Length: 421
Ligand SMILES: O=C(O)C1=C[C@@H](OP(=O)(O)O)[C@@H](O)[C@H](O)C1
Ligand SMILES: C=C(OP(=O)(O)O)C(=O)O
Image: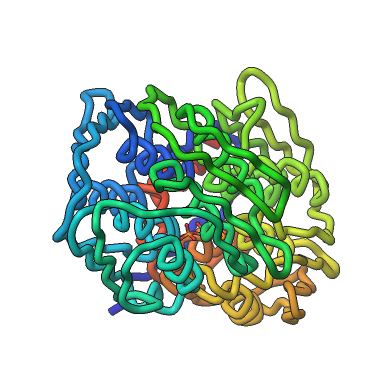
């Protein structure tokens, strides 16, 4: 039988300080860059969750030494990249989009596969691009094989990255190791999640790689060495959003310590979104503190740059009386699940009126009734169900364990937050 988690209802305003683990996006970029570097690297406070263990496993399979430090850090010693190897992508977009260009630099065959849903996520663009830069790859979706020769010619490639910013990030991360570097040109509707590409560019520069960043359509990585770094991973701000939403949903107060004063993480935009919902948000040396208002206000927000935040925002919108509009997120149909369909279905089952538009959702929220909330193997659907359960007693969340994709112990953190009140 599928695992059902009785989402705890809040008995009053949630008051807590919640330290969240490291950023998935930073950890997985840092691992890739460390594997391509010309010397060892240390990652302090990395995220240890399914997505990052899969990335470490993929890079180990290709010849990289990754060992645990006593303090939870990861020490990475690059080795010659080689096959034969097998890479399990799980459901991690970062593994399925960032590792194929690395595998093209390995000598030998590298077989890729992943979860059933991963076989449906958009990927062909990356594989076509790596092929056009000189690699031999069989297939255009999972499962596929990269027949690496130990070198990639590189050069200019034009792609349509409107389905995922990870297509661009994946090519840029390995580009310095291609003989001619890489120049990625985007043609098509605007690329989503641009802060994630800014993160890629910024981390490449920290590793000493020369990058020309010409705005939202063209990026050039010059060929050259990648330096090993000693880096501390920031807390995952997107994973902080369910905890901050708990304050907004219960008129409570939640602080997340260690919130960076400047960051490329998409989750930082949640500060502005919470303000739209009526919450008070304060960033101080102690972290980010959110104080919920008496009642949530409906919002009209463009989430094109920060689609990761949509499930949390949708949960709050369903609790706000009135009509909310979430825009700019057509690409969420290719995420862990079709998030627009999943949110429409699950919020609808709780009594919210939800309509899909071409690029988002219209949510009429207010009075909700409890239901069984399905997670669709999507960590952010599961955490959205937990938020709703705070305000609507009796919600059962199916497969809460799927949160382990990016949070090692979400149910434990959630209970601890409620017990702190
Ligand atoms: O590069 C990254 O680390 C990510 C980029 C974004 O992907 P999309 O551009 O596919 O939305 C984001 O949603 C995902 O969670 C992580
Ligand atoms: C879209 C997401 O993940 P992935 O890195 O698998 O694309 C996400 O975490 O919201």
